[in-house]
Image 1 (cartoon, rainbow, N blue to C red):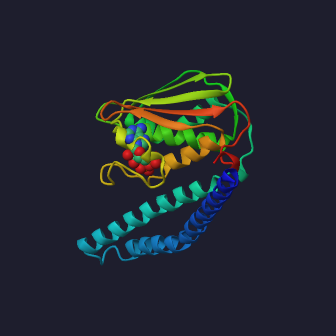
Image 2 (image 1 turned 90 degrees about the vertical axis):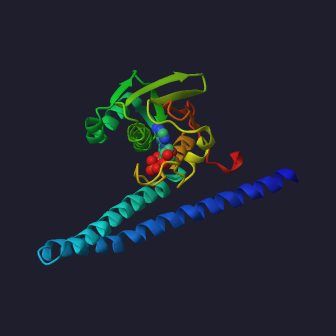
Image 3 (image 1 turned 90 degrees about the horizontal axis):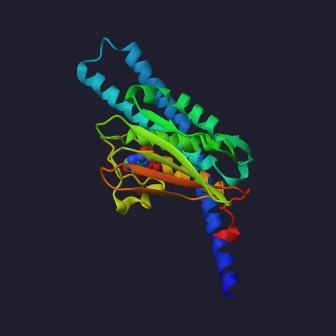
Length: 248
Ligand code: ADP
């Protein structure tokens, strides 16, 4: 009796989760086209009428371009979030040392500009999806750089293992996170640092959580304000997916 009610509840949850993901996908996909129009007409306005526009009008156009750019980032992040589903994962053997090398390439401009130091031990080969694992490292390392304090960012990536799983840690010396927010930051759109100081959409860590769950693992943070952060995540050594009705 109890088992049946739990099963029904988890089916309902899965269904509403799927609906939400479909909505996020359709909405973000359909918003791209009108946004492209806004951006291209703003650019045209700037290019063609530059001489006729006074300073105030130019300032207004720049505000509008800024807003459109922020919206573009949000739409792309939302699309990425809704694209990551269990259906898409094909698991192969992935060398994480190579994944981190690629992460450095993708983030080259922010790494160079911030003079960030990234120390990585040789990482193991795991069973997983390459583009998702790249996205996971990319999100964690780019956050480690973005949420830096006044000192040069120093990031250390280490791992340990048990017979069942790999455990990784991305350790930074940045601004840190108050204990009250340790769980909240993995929920989509939850941000604790304001828009003015740090640009972002609040989607990155929700994407990380989804990816890690699809690799049969967990993600969590150990941190306190002003003391840097340690983001831990695990990856199962067996091919499993935690997004599975029986485990909800
Ligand atoms: P975004 O960076 O786009 O805001 P995320 O989902 O990646 O979204 O992160 C959610 C929030 O968690 C951020 O707004 C920030 O407040 C906090 N955060 C994430 N990573 C770090 C970090 N390495 N150091 C301090 N705060 C962090």
